[in-house]
Amino acid sequence: MVRRPVAWVVALVLLAEGFLVAALNWFLGVVVDRQEMSLAGLDPSTMATSSKVGGIVFGLYFALCALVALLVAIRNRAPAGLGRVLLISAAVVHALLGAFAWGLVGWTAFLTMVVVLGLIVLLLMTYDRAEGPEQAAPGDGAGADGDPQARAEPAPPAGAPQQVPEQRGAPRDGDEEPRDSVPTEVIPPAPTTP
Image (cartoon, one colour):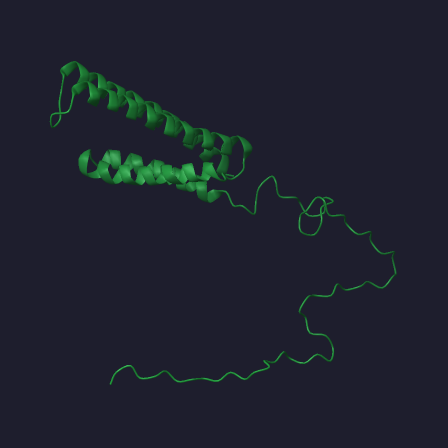
């Protein structure tokens, strides 16, 4: 299947992206600090520090998303809970970055963001909750609903008449169709205009 390779690729791409985002913001912080640049009267050291901290935070965020994708690839199981929320938020971030990149950087950056967005969405969509290694295979000693605690009933001896399990709500012989005890009265709507 394509699920595991997509998860591995997403993990590698997000890890590389996290490293590049952190390194770029750190570099921009150093440039601002050395050039003593100021924007609207802000302190250059404050701008440099905030750029470095922002780079580290976003780098760790993408690294955490890469860890979730790596766990999905190793376990071959759909992400759940916080991991799923992280991957969905990473997809939203890449969609927004792609929209900004189109206007500010160009179509190549936009295309890169869209490819990463597509990989994340593909990772989220290829894992179906009904499939997966956790699901018990039919006939492996589990109950009818897949519960391993349920015990299978022993098979009747050969030649014995088989009982058909009774379905809930199914009409039996002699039962009439269900009827309402009170007939429904239809009231026409009142006119709203004088």
